[in-house]
Image 1: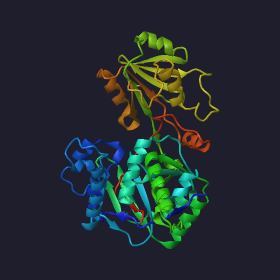
Image 2: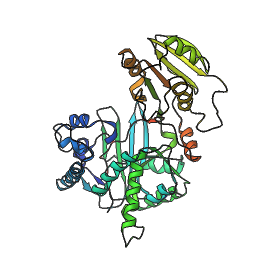
Image 3: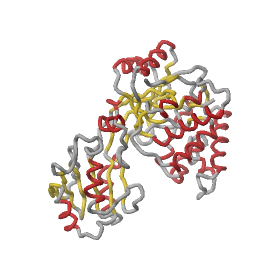
Image 4: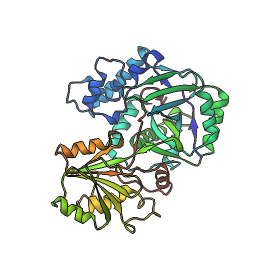
Length: 414
């Protein structure tokens, strides 16, 4: 069962929310954050990317950068740009993209649920990235940014959320990337109790996005418990902030690949090598998008090709073997192009779905890359099957959009 609790959120007053709210720390560089925060002292980037307050080139992992985050977090509270709610509440955070809205519940999720596998993962984490976020959580004594969870669809929860969102939202704005952000407070005791109970009836939650933040938040919570001789299990640090969406409302976008060389092959030899495992069709110069599982789109020398994996080259009964990212990694990137470790190979790059197939074409046409491979997106069912069977997805498999906005609410650990 999934254990959650309400918490006293630290939030910007309505009039400051658009100045405070920012993109997540890991989707932009220090220089992009510096540019976005220019002339805005209230931007959350001063807390989540505090290197922007130092001269250009400052290492974001220096100890004085983390200390700057705390100083800025304190300043935001002193100046009233962030204010703590008086009552423990849940929150609804909805996002609208291209006319489609998804409704998430912001909750305190239980550290032990992460440690004992009730909160299920589908990706490996990197120690260095984990350690960076642990330092940030530890020194601020807060989860400044939420993690992004999915839960099995639940009509009773949908009903409560739909009741809540009939009221006027606390925040309602469109960010510069054209995503609508809508936010409500749930502070009625009966609703809070009902939501807590409904989560208790769920066998598990799934990390959709934010594996490093989840790991960091849970590990700091566990560390605090271990270091507290009077630990009772009721402390705020036993929980970390998550936005939980019903799985049937989430959309995973394609996550595509661009490669720098063909491993010594000519284009003709590369296509010949592909024909062993794929049925190839020349689609001409018009952008071609794969329309079903096990179909790929290749862009090479100003032409688009459809590649359909031949029967017998994949295993639909295996939650990892069924994935197109597995098929392309095994049969194209490894077998033909000699790319063994996609995490470290410098000959490949990854392009998230929101940038579109135009971006693949642009990077090949510019001469920076020699070929692009577009994949059919993974489904939420595939992601949940993998997490349920304790498997790990290959690198760069899922791209969730829209991303959660940071700064709408913060969770203090004490």
